[in-house]
Every structure is written in structure tokens, then in C-alpha cells.
Image (cartoon, rainbow, N blue to C red; front, side, top):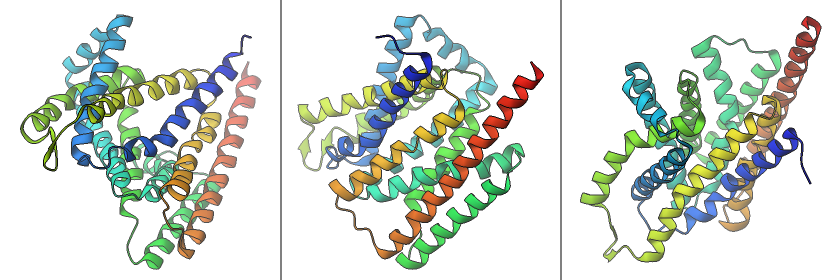
Length: 300
């Protein structure tokens, strides 16, 4: 059976978001490894996997060309810093068993991205988008007051991923090429850390099962990225935006069902507010997409 390009895109995106959404279960297996060490291994193995893929495709030279251009190199370094902070925050949240904040961070990320687009690129905001952002902000305030502390991990994940998106707008590179360049910049630092400070967990040397799991992090980083890039070339942005909510939803399920994270009354208030904000934002995005397509057809 041969599927249409749009169906292929939907299936690829669902698979990518499923891998991302269930990744807390994988990182939980490495909770006994220091988060910074997990990040270093993820960086190195991602470079190996993605570099090998580009070499097979004959595109590895694109990474070198990008790193030789000064402006592109600066953007790649900045992107590398923000995505490494995002990865570390996620790994850390799983290592302490707080997958709930991780899911919250990726739920509010689209709304943070809207605000950053307005601040950095002067993108206009519709009334629905403004209402969605304000509703999400109130939800965060509710959590902060109710729990006595701000959801710093969630806010950090949303802000670093949002900043990463802003920086990527300035990179005229494909997703796989740009991420390969980013991990290539980070890999020397990661290797130095592993050589001089890593290779041990507590008082025990790293064992082979742990090493195999850490090696898998390169594949788990690269494959969803490839699927996501494949999907975005075949789907409207509004469809991509809606399906991406599968990721934090699965993380939310992992947090409640697997990690046993407690849903307090404050969470019971804040999460529905955020879901309502995302629904409002999504409806607004779909409506804007339809208007744009109608205008495009009218011009033709």
C-alpha cells in the first residue's frame, strides 16, 4: 500500500513525537548516571550517528562549510549552547523523577515561542494568541503561588527551546546538518569532560549495559529529527503544531503513570488552563493558515 505524502508526513511526525514523548522512560534507565555525563555522551554519540549519516549521503561537507562561515559559525555556537542547556534540563528533570515539569515545559513552549517571535522579529499577535499567552502566564503564577516555588525546570526548558528556535531562523541549513554542526561544536568539550571527569558512576566503573544505553542516545536524538524533517516537508505548519502536542502529552502520561508524580490541586487548576490556552492558540493558528491559503488561491 502506498500512502500519500501527507499521510506519510503524519505517520513520520507521530512516530517522532512518540519517541520524544516516551524518552523519559529511556533516561530513567540512566538516572544513576550524573546528568552532565549523560549529556556529554549524548553529544558525542549524536555526532557519530549524524556524522555517519551525512557521510553516507555525501553531505558531510555541508557541516564543514557552515563552520567556516563566521556568521553561521556564531549562530551555530549560540544554538549549540541553548540546545545543550535544554537537553541538560530535560535529563536532569528525569534524573530527579520530575517528568511532570518536563511535560509542562514542552506544553508552554509554543506560547513562549509566540512571545519571542513578537519580541525579536516584531511578529504581530492576534487577540487569541495574546489571550492564550496570558492564560498560560496565569497558570504558571497559580503553580508558583500554590507550590511555593516557580516551576523553574519547566520555564527553563520552554525558554531555552524557544531561544533555540529563534536562533535557528537565522540558519539556512537543513535540520540534520545544523544539529550535526551544533554537536560538532560541543563534542570536544564533552570529550574533555568524559576523559578527565567521567567514566565512573559513584565508586563503580561504567559497565557495558550503561555504555550501550548511552550509545543509544545518539540514535534516539537523530532518528526523530530525521522523521520530523521528513514530516515538515509534507505537512502544513498548523498540522505540525497540533501533532507536536503528542510529545508533552506522552511525557505527562509517563510522569503520572510511571514516575508517580503527584498531581496536586494546583496542578489540577494549572494544567487545564494551559491546555485551554493551547487549544485557543491552535484554533487561531489553523484559522490563520486557512485564511493564508484562501488568499494564495485568490491570487492564483
